Structures are given as structure tokens and as C-alpha cells.
Image (tube, rainbow, N blue to C red; front, side, top):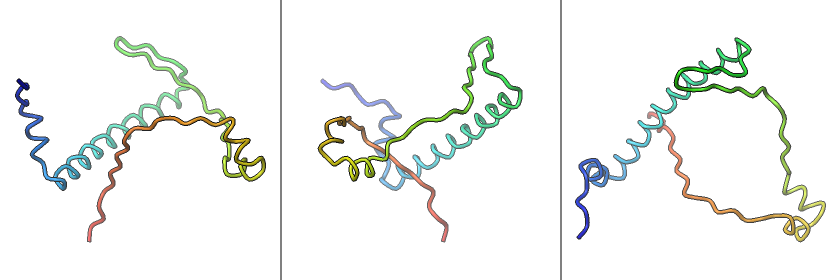
Amino acid sequence: MTKPLDSETKKLRALSPGELGDAVGHAKARLSDIEAQLGVYKAEAVRRGLLEADGELFRLALTPPGEQSRVDSALLRAVMGGPFVDHFSRTVAVDWVMRCSARKAG
């Protein structure tokens, strides 16, 4: 016998596609507010020149800006050829991606 669904799952499954889209949008808005607050904290830590800080519950570590290299695969294929690039390439699995953006008024 299957286990009965909890009330939150029942509410989630009852949402129309549009309601689900709106729920995702509201969650993203809350997340955006939290990310903005984290940005304020990060800016303050950088302003103070902190590289680490130990609180009672959390430890903060900051790494200064640096550089990373990226490969231009289209240019590499054009110069070295597809078989060469394929020899050094590998396939990775990707999961579902969900994007949500605010609808424009009007």
C-alpha cells in the first residue's frame, strides 16, 4: 500500500501550471533578496580586508579575485580540427534546468 500524501505535497500537486510558475517566481524573488543581503555582507567583509572570520556557528573564508582560463572550443576546433578536440573531450551528464523570469507588465 502506498503512503498517503502529506498536505504540502497535496497542495503542490493541486497547483495549475500557471500557479506553479507564479510560485517559482515568488521563491526566486525571495532568493534574490537573500542573495542581495549576502552581497552586502560580502562587501563589508571585503571592505574590512577579512580573509577569514570565525563566529560561534559559522566560519567565513574569502578568496581574493584571481584569473581562470577558459577554452574557446569553437576556435580550437577551427584550428586543430574536430577529431583532435574530440580526443581530449568528455561528455558529462546534466540534470533538468529550470529557469524563471519575471513577466513584463503590459
